[in-house]
Image 1 (cartoon, rainbow, N blue to C red):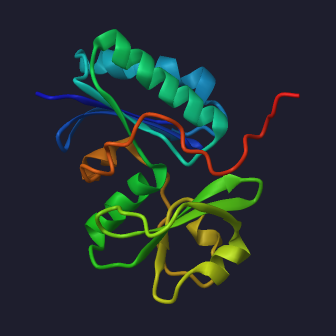
Image 2: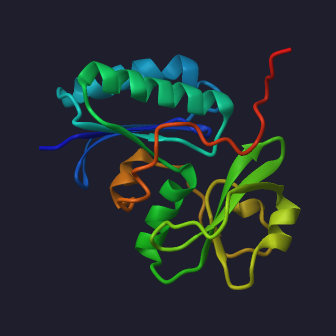
Length: 203
């Protein structure tokens, strides 16, 4: 058994999973908003107690996402990687949203849309290999509707805010889907990818 611990705290959902290939050994998933700092370590402890095993590798969401959520998840992943002497790598939040959509709709043209806060949406075009056509941008819903190319469907939390779009899914990133990530999409450096400025800035 080769266990992968997946930590996802980039957006409003806190999603954790221990995966043995496609098999979910243990998982926790829920939308908690800004509560990652308080909830992550107890949830990780419960997850690991349930599995009764130490992971062989760690995957962590590196964004885009909130400043605090990314910092907390990546710091936890790095600390556990050092403690267990296991490799830590990253993946993009929008790639994890896209992966199960492409599994169900392999021929779709897809834009992934996720809540970015302050009324904005993260949006990015991805192909079925989870390769991005351009960098992630943060736009309001009306601007996303204007930006969306003809024939492109949307998926992700916030997709239903895009007027006139064909919505295929509206779920938050789910750690249980990490086995669907391509090798390249799950080999990013474990450093945060910020698109929007942090809500709090030191004076």
